[in-house]
Amino acid sequence: MEIFDFLKKSHNDFLEFSKEIVFDKRHPLHFNLIALYGSLIELSGSMIILLEKNAKIAVPSIFRTFLETYVEFHNLVRDPKYGYFMGKSN
Figure 1 (cartoon, rainbow, N blue to C red):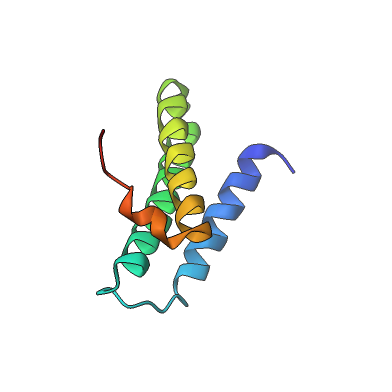
Figure 2 (cartoon, rainbow, N blue to C red):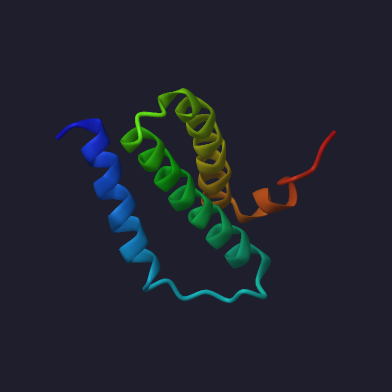
């Protein structure tokens, strides 16, 4: 399977999975996880559209944002206390 086909399949699968997510929007951890998950879906969808339109110049910037968002998501899943550090600047 080609990488682009994998991206499209993953995007569609994750959209489908999101229909079954149950969460408490008042709980900061749940809210942040869902927001990050939604951002990952939206960013991958944007990359798909750009690649289909052969507008490849913007894809690296979006992909970098995707990776940064994934790191935040991953860190928050592994350690819920990580949420206290999100958005803080030193």
